[in-house]
Image 1: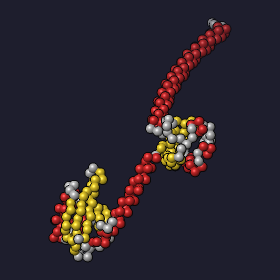
Image 2: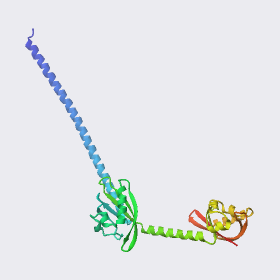
Image 3: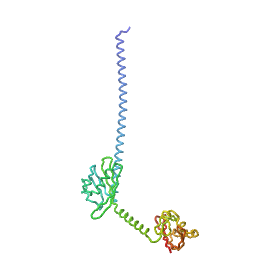
Image 4: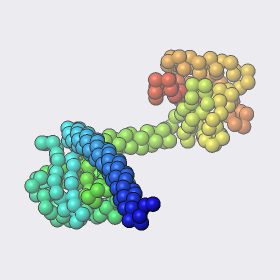
Length: 297
């Protein structure tokens, strides 16, 4: 018969080895979890490094694109101003020979109102009040530089990162001069067209009336609103002479300058003999305007 001490020793050994196995298993589990954690950390670290490389690559591409944009702007004659949050000039990029109100060094460190005339500065401030990232503001202004008047168009953009402002200034003097000349010629044409002692009508190639002048209204009795869009031949040619009138219009459309005498009809049905001078005016490659003058003979 075994003594009680024998069972106690056996129980102790079972406990000891059981605990040892548990500790060993726990250690193995811990090592496994630690290894898994290390793998996750390494994976995240590698991912972070990859993202950093991609970010750096993207940043270099953005810088290269921005530098190219600046070079192109400067090359075509644009002026680039960089301003801080207090509207102080930080830098200026301009091609030599571009008209500037002040020398570049006179801008740096100064506020807008310290360099630019007050009327122009007000336009800047008005645009700056509305300026937000992604919402550029554009306005035009004029400046007298070395005795010459220049016209400029300013486009302001604000950075979402540092809240700085980039102002792109383009010299639009030539365009403004062309615009003024075109306006002058348009005004002159309107004066000559409306006050000509000759009856004048402008039509499409198909004879649809575009415009008539005052003398046409007086001669034929039609109001200009009545004739707009109507076929000129059907409008003023007697029915028995419609085919003849259409042939004359067809000749003009074929770039033939014509001078004919014919009978035409007024709004009230009465007829008159007229001299017809006709030619085409090329507006675009496929767009011709028929220009006719009617004289009462």
